[in-house]
Length: 89
Image (cartoon, rainbow, N blue to C red; front, top):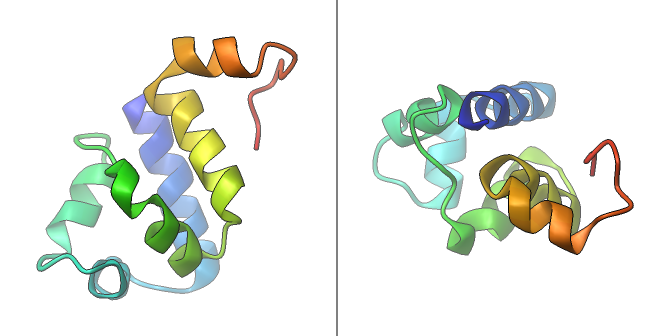
């Protein structure tokens, strides 16, 4: 599921027209490689950075959090959103 999250994040970032380096700088990471690792499915966006990351890529904050919860914690997602069959934010 992390790879799917990474693809979703990458697509949103590219749609926003920013590079991994620009996103890293705006969110406050020292190295863009962290963004690369997350987009490659080898890491997760820390929940304390959801707001900044969402703002940088132009996704409403609640939609961003809901989508990442779907990918990162699918069991919790199903408990919180049982009627959301597709899981799309």
